[in-house]
Image (tube, rainbow, N blue to C red; front, side):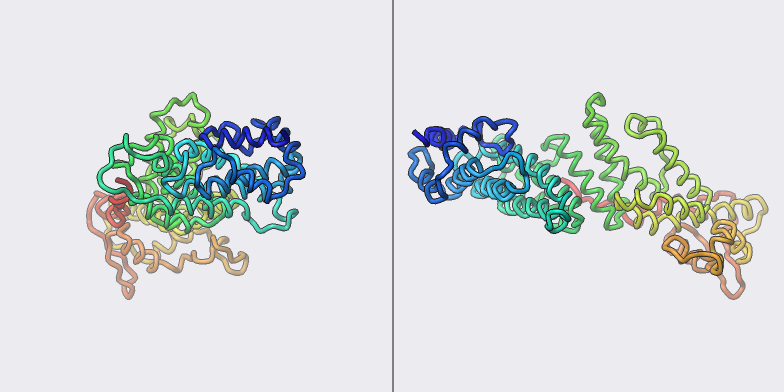
Length: 457
């Protein structure tokens, strides 16, 4: 009689009814309370025997381990302490995910939605525990890292397709492959290990049974492109990153903008798409973006855009320094610090050439002229070693770097010119068509670093 509730639960689980199989006590709290009352005093061996001998149990070791771990959770869970129950929670979650590793596991199609639901739940719990890692004396990101190791085993167990399967024949485990990919990559970014995304991105397509990426759910496609764009950006593949952000945003615009999640996801994408476009020399049209971007954010980015456009190196560096914390939080500081100065120098030299060549008819620019332009752009006080603190923003900038700046711009294809150091001259083509001397930034970057055609299928 004492085991009536436990036997009833095992009967349901054995026949593939997983309604009560959740860690969320707000959904099944009363049932777990009854189970806890009935199972108190039963040791682990007794629970294992109860599961093993139950007539409804499939002959599958992993499935039985999952059922046993859930009974242990019900018996020992403390509803008032997440920390004291954490071992029970993660043991059950691991057993649940392990059930999906074997493609022929019992009731696998019914277990898959349970696994995705519980994944969402335990990630929230892991976040809460990791937020208190100093008080709990645990490692930074310990619990999220543990979840990633569990999910990565499930990802690695997903078999590549055999033959040409139609979308109707694709098993449930394959149906959640992109969901799994996105969860893993999101966690890797959150635990500050984005390099681990490489293996996931590399193996996703070979494992997928879908003939085309577009067959996945649109929201999952958007999330994947967003994460892939961030991965490319971290690896300084700016053009590839922009292509993914742009595709993600265009796909998102096909969804109803009345949905708060759509607006939130649009903002997430634009947080990276806007600075990536700036590095590519693209102008932002703000009007279509207003549902997703606050006016304050627009004003902030417009300030940086003006500094870059007018060749104001000091302004760019002051802007980066002022927004350092915000940029670091989004892992944008390094790529902007690396890419923006040369684009700013390019725009400065373009202004000098426009005045000197097209207005005054001169095609030979003296180095002292360019040095004076650099002084104005960098700021004399800003580059004075006697009054400045050496930082990542001003350490490499000097008006004496005339030849270095010109040669670098030429090598990058941002400037078509010949430099003559002994004569202290930079010679450009005699023309009023400035784009023949200073090509558009986006044109040069796209030509040098074309988007990879193998990104998606």
